[in-house]
Length: 465
Image (tube, rainbow, N blue to C red; front, top):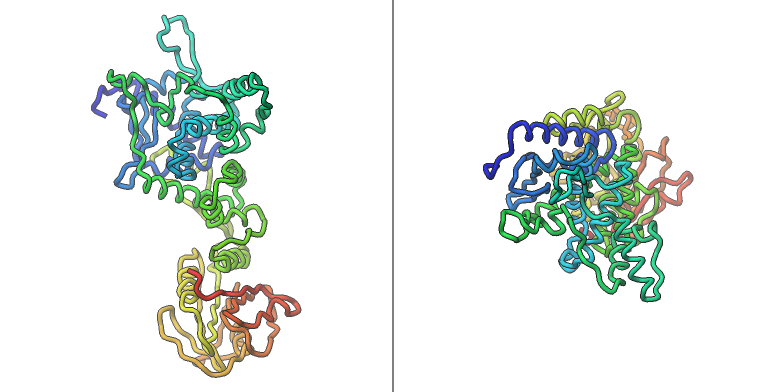
């Protein structure tokens, strides 16, 4: 900030433009950008950078640096475009971490093309923003900021047609990041378009009078952490019914199709298949855990939900505070009863994971029960005893308030009952089968899914982590 500080009136005008753009993101233009800038706890006006950049330093922090003179020179929509562009760059670096890709000029240009194409569509702009032309003589001439995806496509078309090849039409060309990358590699040659204005692409060739290029820190671990946090927040918003979050997240996922096994695992871990309403493809993941999370979520979906208040969140963001989630509808803690069959060997990792799952689920009141022929209440971490025969009817009677344990009945109606068992005992028919979730251990009997009516049932494979 101490390097050639801008005039106070310019800093204030630039700050107001920045806050206005962030307000627009918060009310629906870009949920991803809104959450990302909420993670940037420092927004620093400085002339040490020629344009703007999101920096990720080695201490785990992110900050927005912006040149006040540059923001003031931009047309009214330009600041939002630049901020969206910078946010998207950080997400691209998070998603495409392969050094081979990030070091390839063709992929760098491909990222610029796709980011600017999406920015124009999402921000409802017809053309790139502009600034006064460099070297202009005060004649009012202006030049575009950044890479024009249409011009890049035109250059690509001309290059391929001159060599007798068939280019893709524009909409197919910008379909995904890797589509643009593959098509640019078909060109005989391409040059980095100038002026770039994007420090991620080329920096400023004449910055600081050194003739070199300005670079900004992008610590990989920080980028990974912040990127994953942002995508996680947006996914939770989307799964709660946020239309803007859902649309933007699906668009981002679709543009990273065929990005390799790592991206498939990343999106799968975030719950993309659940958002799309499709069954996940078979792959080496904790599938039963994803299944249980999704099923349990459906059992607890009644009444109140956590929501992201867009207008209030945008105002909080503009005031420099992190946006807060709030509840809509009547508040009521959800009740989950977890029953472990102790008549045989139970995988320890299943018990551990269920403890953390229910323990970190917001608004859930959990009750723990072990059983063989008898029932015993316990708290997570306590030793459980067993070894006798198995009787599921006792669990049903306790869950439905008919059986006493330690002189007390279960007087609360549970929203979900999770039973972890090998399944070998006479079948039972609960009063409300839809609330029951059965996890069947190795070589167990999965009768609940064949029961009439069928109950939610999945097999747990020992050794998964």
